[in-house]
Length: 239
Image 1 (spheres, rainbow, N blue to C red):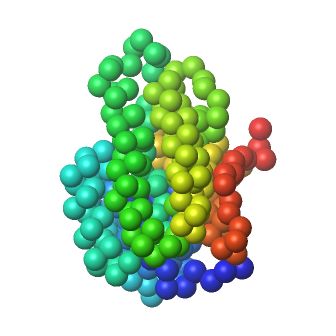
Image 2 (spheres, helix red, strand yellow):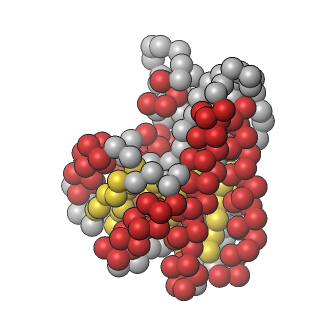
Image 3 (tube, rainbow, N blue to C red):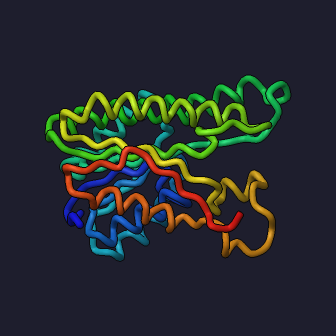
């Protein structure tokens, strides 16, 4: 198992849920962390928790769907950390609504955030990884990107797009010793899934937890550089 100590990671949507769990898991391995998001209060609180692991921690407040903000913020992050080795594209939004009932503006916002946001951040990070001739990009899709379902057309379309974009990028940058993997988790307990009513009220002990997802990311990152986890789906054993 390859050591991750002293690596530098950027995690979008890192203030809560899957992003926070991933940040904690990496910090425990000695990785310096930059978390990003739109809510400074949430990011600041998570950053304070991460500092307890004795690693360098910073946060940056920006909207991944705004390219100008992304360009400025990614440069600041890399300048502050000194380099970047790992990018976890986790930031995303979702909404439930029928194809005709969902407002065009909301449909567009989901695509802009989940697809263009991931593209913008990756576009700005990738040159640093290419110059180093090494790196890891983990793109968070969803099982909704493998199969469409009623009333989630925008979210599903965005996650299908993430898979296509990731696979294309993977084939471009393998020659640069950059591993790109796409993860497709099923429903995980998070603020988003609870807020959307995707989980029944009550006990969630049999539902996938953010920490389960973080363990999958760690496993992929710790593989020898000659090996790459191209993609993986994470499911609950509870039907």
